[in-house]
Structure formats: structure tokens, C-alpha cells
Length: 249
Length: 249
DNA sequence: CTGAGTAATTGACTTAACTCAAAGATTAGT
DNA sequence: ACTAATCTTTGAGTTAAGTCAATTACTCAG
Image 1 (cartoon, rainbow over the protein chains, first blue to last red):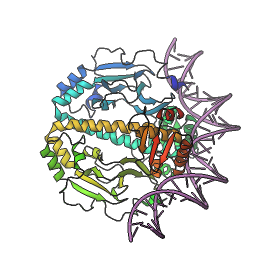
Image 2: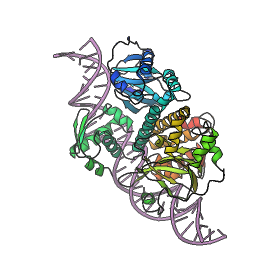
Image 3: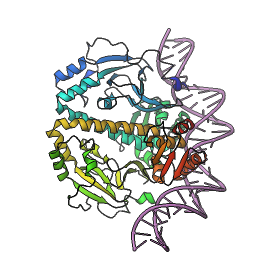
Image 4: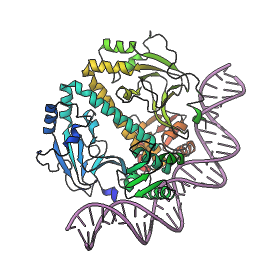
């Protein structure tokens, strides 16, 4: 399994010391300004925080941090896409989350004690992230306690999401897990249909849902043959979510 | 399946309107005072918060709140034990967490938007909880922003735990999921052995781990016959966690 | 202490999902 | 555009886990 070696063999560059280019442009920082963790900051404070941060470019499959590494930074995705995963003792790679541009990750490290990354993070394609010192954000919160509310409600939202993810995983059969996962990806809720883009390659969605890639492929083929989804590469079109839900019983 | 009817048939009492007795004794509030969310509060503030709270007694299997109900309170467990679960469209009951005395739950509702419970909560045996108005705690944080740090680090811890729970569920086979679950219950880490008490009846641990009770029972019997665990009711003795971990590959 | 009701175990059987293998399709990098 | 690598699909055979059913063991209220 190719994934097994990913963390240790495939990446020669030292982790977290990727080249940073001077911080002269504003691309991608518009999204930062509207992120819940940052949008309430006074411009001065935000600028100061950005000054203390570094922009990192990550290549395809490049590792950003390792599980259990001391965590001095959290991250904001400017472009590309990343994935969070863990490796167990037998080297099996288990995908836990994928992160899109405009999202933060490892932000929980701001208040984690001890601050150690709970998983590996790697770029799924060439990506840019803003690497924000945990200390800097924390000092900002200490100086301006009124900023805490944004952080609290962000953390609350994160906790609810994780809880929901956990719920999907207590679904006992692979087909229903996949259906639940797809329904959750639907942008406009379960009433209308819509197009869904898988945030990960299919083999990693399979890993995320605790099934084999072959099983994933077969289930999708089956849903397709029943007219429940229309598949185009990593884009799925779901015309009737309600019917999908009924199927998953 | 008896569980299927639990939320709708078995409980006749209206939810969240259980009798509250006058708040004259201090039993169980010692634990409250040392909980991360409360231990930093000035005595006056804590007293005030408690004044606005109610103590609820819950009977065996009594429902405390329902999934999707507007959430005006969060809870601290004084005695007994509760369980959080969800019901899906087909009525299947899926256990997501169990809560012991000294723990808080639904505290994420303080900053959730909209504040709606993400699951059902019921007492597993007769229990007492403190029902704290979300509004009261929130006002406290607004008045004393310095309290926010405790809340943030509590939320961070919660998020890490949920992430870890999710990780267990991405383990693909039932045996390894159970082993991982047991290891995590071990109080003294994975080096030394120890006794573990299942926080839920076995059939609910099975539900939490996305397997059938029969499967749970068979796996445990197998571990037992291999001398890996010693079972006594809901207490398990694990002499050599290291060996258990090796087995789970 | 006792009995009703629930929970746990065990057996026999069935099915869903995994494994291995090989062929196609897609993607990334030159 | 081309090639190499990786991902995806499909098939065939095997195994893990689910289902159904029956028995035994607990638990708790009276």
C-alpha cells in the first residue's frame, strides 16, 4: 500500500521549514479577513498577527507536520487542499479530515495543553498556507479578551462538526455511511438535489469512511446503476436526496 | 429492538421539566468547583451562577433532552451516569458518548449558533444533574472576559477528544476498534496494565463502536480465552496492554 | 428474597465487506 | 503531448461480521 510509506519515506524535506516568500501580496488574505477567527480583529491587530506569520508553499504530498510534534503554529489554507490523517502502529493510514481554502486547522492548538499535533497534515496538491504562531494569537486574546467570543463560537462549531462526524461513523454498514457522508456534503440541505464534489480522492474518502477503496467503488457503482447518483470524476450529482435517505435504512 | 422506542414511547414525563428540589445542600458541588469551566470563577460569580441553575433528578432511562431541541441549558453531572445518542430516520439508536459525575455536557451550546442539542441525552441510572442556563454563563463571560481562557482550553480539550474518538471509528475491523477503545479507557496509559470499567452496558458499548452486541460478546470472549483480558461484569482487567496493541494489527 | 424484565452469551447460518489480482482510467510532471 | 505513476474499477474467492433464535445470567423493584 503506497500510503503506508507516505509519512516517512516519500518526503525528504524537513517538516515545517519550507521556504517562505516575502509577504508582499494580498492574494488569499481576503478569505482570512472574513474567517470567524479573524474578522473581528481590529485591522492593526490583524496586520500585526499576519506580520508574525509566514506563508508556506507546499508541494503535492508534502508533509506539513507530524502527529505528536510540539505544536507552535496553527494554519489557514490560502489555496490548494490538505488532509489530516493518523498512522497507527501497523502503519495504516487513516484519513480524518480534509481542509479547503478559507479554512483553519490545528487552531485548537491555541489552547491545547500540551500543544502537540493530534495527527499528520499533508498537502493533497500544491498548496499555500499561512502559518500563524499559536503564541501570537494567544497574546492577542490575552490583550483583548473581547476577541475570545469569536474563538469560542468557532471552537463550538468545530466540536459540533466532529460530533456529527463521529455519528456517521457509528453507522454500521458501509453503504449507509457513504450515503450519510454524501448527504452531508450537499450544499443546499436534503430537500433539493445538487452537485457534490468529493473533497478527497476516492481512495481517501474510503479511508475516511472506514472502508476499502474497492467497497467504495462498488457501492458508488450500485448507486449509479440505480439512478441515485450521476458520477463525473470527483463530482457527483444527486438528484433526489430524499430517495437516497430512504434507501439507507 | 427495545432501544428503538426509547425516545418516544418509554418516557412519558415531559422533557426538561423534572422536579427541582431546593438548592440547600452542597453534595456534589465540590466536583463542580474543581471543574475547568468553573474553578477559576470568583466565589461570588460561581454562587450567582448556581443560584440561576436548577438541580434535576433523573430516573433510570429518563430522557433529559431531545436532538434538535432549542438548547437553553447545559449540564453538569452530580451523580449517576448519562448517555448521549442519536436516532436516525429508521429509528436506530446510536450511542455517541457517556457522561460520568464531575463532567459537563452540552456545554458547547454556550456558543452554538443556533443553540440546538445535537443528540438525545438520557440517564442510564438514577442521576442528578445541575442544569445551567446558557445565558447565565454567557453573561458571566461577557462581564468577565478573563474567564474565557478556561472555556477556550476546555473546548480545545473537548475537540481533541472528539477527534480521537473519530480516529477509533476509522479502524476498519470490530476487534481492533474494541481493543483501541479499551486501551483508551486505561487510566495509567499503555505501559502498565490496569482495571477498566465499561462506562456503558455492553450492548451500548457495542453501539458506540458500531458493532452488534453479539460481535462485542464474541470478541471479548476471544480476548478472554487468549488471556488478554480478565472479565468481571463490567470491569475488565488488562494485564498487558502492550500485547493487546500488538494483537491489533 | 423472589420473579419479571432486561442484558449477555452461544450456536448455526447468511451476507456484507475484505483480499488479491489484473485491467482501465486519470493525473502529474517532463 | 507523452510517460510514469497513481487511482479506480471489476472479478473471483475468502473471511469477518451480521442475523435469527434459544439459553443463561443479571438487575432491580416489590
